Length: 77
Image 1: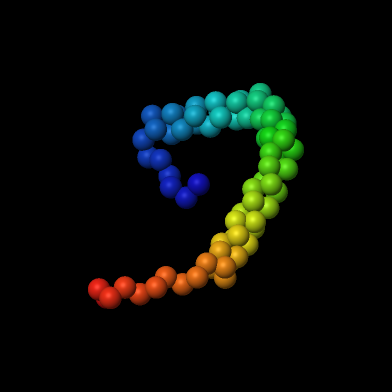
Image 2 (image 1 turned 120 degrees about the vertical axis):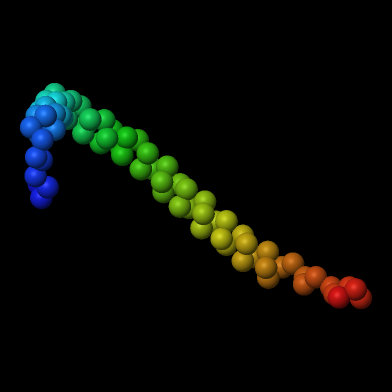
């Protein structure tokens, strides 16, 4: 840490905060990591599905650009 705390109360509060965070990580860290892994496994196929749909949409737009006739100019322009 580059900044030194001059006030002893601030330093003590910071130490308590770090202690609490460390205890929480030690207590719940494995559960959180396991939950993240479960979410990755569950949603990974959906990510591929969305990627596929996005590519299909791009292809369809290109198709429409080729198929649709250009708009005719009106005499007001």
